[in-house]
Length: 362
Image (cartoon, rainbow, N blue to C red; front, side, top):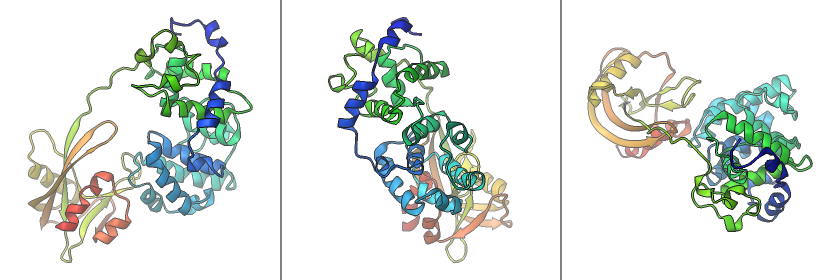
């Protein structure tokens, strides 16, 4: 509990009425707010995790055009699902959606469960997805606690607890559970998220346009700039990565498929890997080709170097044209000789996409 407020003071706040009134007048026109079904809400909330709204909109349209319902998604090949997700990132979301769709088909006769306990048993459904989907699509009064809500609620209730700690989320969930109206839980949750996304921003909140300014304890006590409290992130490391562009006699390029689980699971890529300490780029690529493919290669010209950022690290990736000198290609991963047309049809990580222009011009 923050020292700024007592539990009694918390209980006196009533934020739902002014918040929902504001939301009704100011809600953004978003495609998943039209023709609402449990399936459409679920897809949108999964896509919106750690992803900006303007980025999600075209992906949502394309995904629903190809997989308009849970049955279509369950029947789809994972590669087709990943291809539609290509560039959206956090590919485990797509793999889990696909697994969940098949589980719905096999265990729930193709009907998405509308009770929180059953819905939570589906792959990829954690506390946030469950709360968002079950409240918005099914009317269950479960508060959402995402980044936008954390920020806004910490200011409204003047909580100085570090928002990276699970106990802070638990405390805010308890406070919001007392606020969420049982007749309009979805509107309340969407309004809280909308408030954080459009008004209560991290660095320059628009307090003059906030419907809860008259109730916000942080504003009253001059604490807006100090909240929420968050432990600074450690510096993001950058790794050097090398990949081999190996062509066959007709110009096709060797590609390999990543394991289904783990980072970028199920996507295709060019063979290669991290540069170890003390290695030159050519030496690292020779080692990777020997270890991954069982071949000895001659390193040719550098084709391109690109930079790419993931959530917890960055890479500087260099691609070299390579020629096989000795050995027969072998790998524990699926391999394929691919034309640029083949490559365009397969799901690749965004970092590899940054190499495509140089490949086409090669």
